[in-house]
Length: 442
Image: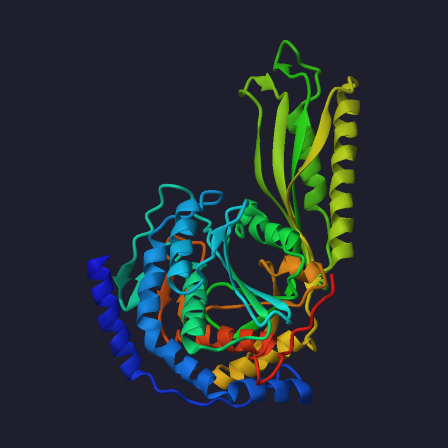
């Protein structure tokens, strides 16, 4: 990393020197209540907050270097421990002395408030989509830094680390508690297992923000739900010639896929499906005794998702019956195995958390382009009725989930600045304002 670190320092200094900050017009995407604005204004009027924002910007080159160090620690699905242990040490070194690894593998630390306020969780995920053996070395090419996972989500981890360090150095005593989590299992078959475990074990959490990816320009306040299944077909199997007349697991699977392929789903609320993988059989001259396909179903509406699931299962049962009737032996069966469950959820645009985020965008000079719906760690608290949003960690980048993923630290300090302001707006500052987050009373 020595060569890369030097390149970071040189290119970052050059980039910062060439950038000019410019105020943007006040956003018009989210309507702001007067009480929310007054509370937010009271928070940012504290001189310690302005100083903290300056500290975040000044320390950004070191946070970028830390982002690259994290990138070079592989964190394949279900194998995030090495990165989690390293991040735990970073948390402890920056003031979260009691930070720990929980039973699911999440690195968690808590900044205690004055004991009379809500609990706000801020998180970034440790895992990447890349399997073991993928080279995650950071390489500078043409002014961009390339490495698998460099933005999704090591950028979020770096932004959160900046918040932790700045909060402790600022001397600010918050009204509410702030829980920081570097969580496992956000990607793919991780199925949000890290965040699910945190909300299972910590019912006291009253609000949530996830820092995920780069390109800070929208607030994700809706959660696209998904249900993922393996449809497993089984039967007796046999020789293709000698046992001809037996029903085939692969034929039953094919009939099912054909039925599903003809489904029509609504464009609003957006509802989608795909058969992503297929497998089965023994050889070309065998009647298949087994077959399996993986089905991904998604929707922005809970009822539409449930309806699609029932239609797919009904199609499979019909296909099995047709295959068995075709050969009149009734041997094929199908099993539905759930492999992924991301709940549908939403945080209203009128929620104080969304309003505070919009004001934070304004304060740091970022144009809020839209509210959005996606599938992130925020799905879990949204589905529980807990205010939650996802925002990016700042900087510029692209190619997420590909070997050519890249990052540039263009105005990247604005990412942690935005999350820092959102956090303070929600938990408040002792002696200044109690903050906007309400205790849920669970």
